[in-house]
Length: 387
Ligand SMILES: [Fe+2]
Ligand SMILES: [Fe+2]
Image (cartoon, rainbow, N blue to C red; front, side, top):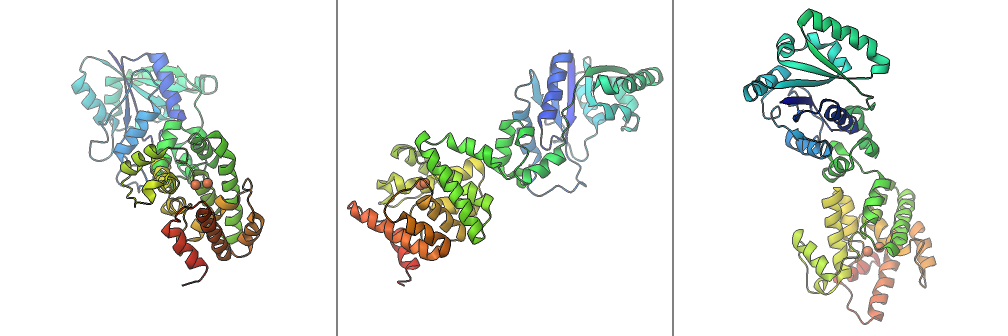
């Protein structure tokens, strides 16, 4: 049996890794293809919000899901201390004494192979499968491979491969500034955003695409309007525009769900409701929307709260909460008597705008003969300084 072994930190696994694995799968056609994430050395200071080894394994499962026969092995992450390939080969030899082992590596690794721990043992036990840009590096690689074969009896196969130029450390930096989605498998990127590994922030275009899939098509214009209004208000009042955009994009994510579907989400996310809320899907969508946004996209507490309070308001709101409440109310597609006055006030005095918006909302609700929600009544009192 041919066993290919592809090790690495995969922190995170990116499309360069996936493509390398695809080349191995196609060129070598191994019977068993082990992807082995290493145990990151303990002395290496791990950045905050790095995934745990198990979480990194889960990212690998997503990244290599499309590679025929690839299986993710926990062999190295379950072993204490620095991961030495020789230890892994010891273990594999114990499991597969008679089989042919292929160690997958890039050009750089072949050139420095004599510095590897127990490299003679590795050469004795394994065939090196070297992914190489044959057009550019072909001669250097063949020369070095020839030397290794003569000197150590090495067995080396060269797999022509055009590597995608990217590094995990570069991707980690990009993720922090809302970049990098195109360098990762979508499943991997989604999981990184969901868990906010590496302090990743979602690309807004990616977030729109994902969020709009949850909307009725006719609501997209409203949500896009709410986002752009929220960004303008954020710039006017000194909030982070991209955080405001995130909240705007996600604020109505559960709006299209019917009452029963809202209740299912309330159960799933342990949302407790009072009697009035249990009669109103409109009230529920703010709470379920916040919970779903956190579950799917890992939004911060600030964004969660802004979505949570966008329908009713409440006393003493944060700047971001006020921005989303008002942006939802006055975004460019909104048209109702008094909207122009409210729009102007939003950019002159945001608390006055809250007072006006809340009182207009109460009037509206009462005009339908409905009972206004207590948070809205209290919020209106708070911002009208009646207390
Ligand atoms: Fe809403
Ligand atoms: Fe809305």
